[in-house]
Length: 178
Image 1 (cartoon, one colour):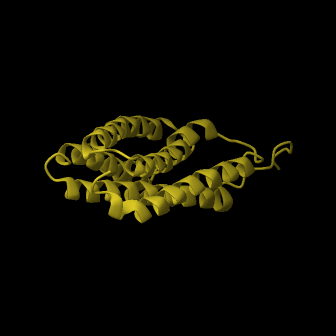
Image 2 (cartoon, rainbow, N blue to C red):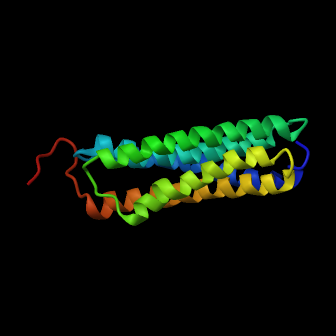
Image 3 (cartoon, one colour):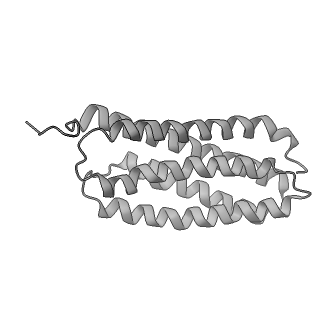
C-alpha cells in the first residue's frame, strides 16, 4: 500500500509477536486447566478473553496494513471498523468486569483492561477518518494503537499468570481441597 512500505519491518515484528503470544496463551490456559477451577468462568470472560482479542487485533492490523492495497482508503475503512468493533467490545468487557465476583478489579486492572485498549480502539476509529487528509499521521496512529494493544495484552497475560501462580493456589483436578 502506498505509504506503508517503510512500515514493513514494524508490522512483521508486531504481527509475529502477537501471533506467538496468542499461542503462548493457549499453552498457559492448558496448564492452568489442570487446576481446580473456582469461580473462573466469569473472570475468564472478563480478563482472559480480552487479552486474546487484543493480541488478535494487533495481528489482524499487522496483516491488514501489509496487504497489497492500491490506496489507503480500503485499509482505513477496515481499521476504522476494527476500532469501532473494539470500542463495542470494550463496553462488553466493562460489563463483564463488573459482573464477575472472582476478583475485585484494581485501578491497574481498569487501566490495562479498559482504558488503554479503549483508547487504542478509539485512535483506530479516529485515524481512519483522518487517513483521507493526513495519511502519514494516520499511519503513525495505527502503529501506536497496534502497539498499545500488544503491550496491554502482554501486561494482562503476565498479570493473569502471576495471579494464578502466586495468589490462586487451587488444587489440581481430581484432588480434594485440604
